[in-house]
Amino acid sequence: SQQGEEDPQALSIQEGENATMNCSYKTSINNLQWYRQNSGRGLVHLILIRSNEREKHSGRLRVTLDTSKKSSSLLITASRAADTASYFCATGSSGGYQKVTFGIGTKLQVIP
Amino acid sequence: GAGVSQSPSNKVTEKGKDVELRCDPISGHTALYWYRQSLGQGLEFLIYFQGNSAPDKSGLPSDRFSAERTGGSVSTLTIQRTQQEDSAVYLCASSLAGTSNEQFFGPGTRLTVL
Image 1 (cartoon, rainbow over the protein chains, first blue to last red):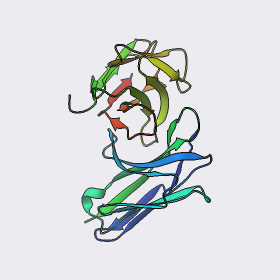
Image 2: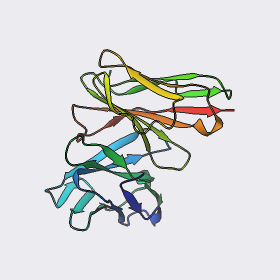
Image 3: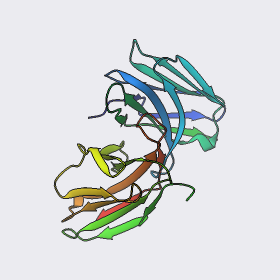
């Protein structure tokens, strides 16, 4: 079963707009990661946020984590056509073996 | 090598045949993972290796699926008596020790079972 669930499942925006994707999860986590996948092939790691962090930035990416609501959001500012991809959140569970579980992804389309 | 490599990149096989998929992780990465992704779907965890042992193989869908890792490096995922529902992209990833680290993915093997 999937731990993380991304929302929305699909998002279409105009170039230059901001894109926000959300991830909800069920159990306690050690960290949460966001990945991007182009063309159904390998995933690329974007950013990792630990359970004791609330916000993290990397270039045009901003990730927030609310452990009380068991949710995270990924904001891409000033989107570009090249940002078109699927975005996945992955949760690293806390305690013992830290299994990483991926959500089903958000398919983002940025229209030039 | 610079990244995770997988071979073959594409594999077409007939139903009932066995296939072997190979993964070469990044040198020094002790953790290795196999995932399966069906068309338009998320990643389905298959198995996790720490060194040569597999502490979590709970995601293997049936006993037709097996995987091994030798020398703490290369891993092979074997699917016996392939079925059409096995058609998917099989992704391998590696990371430094422990699963809370960034995973580096290979390009995947696209398996098509006719």
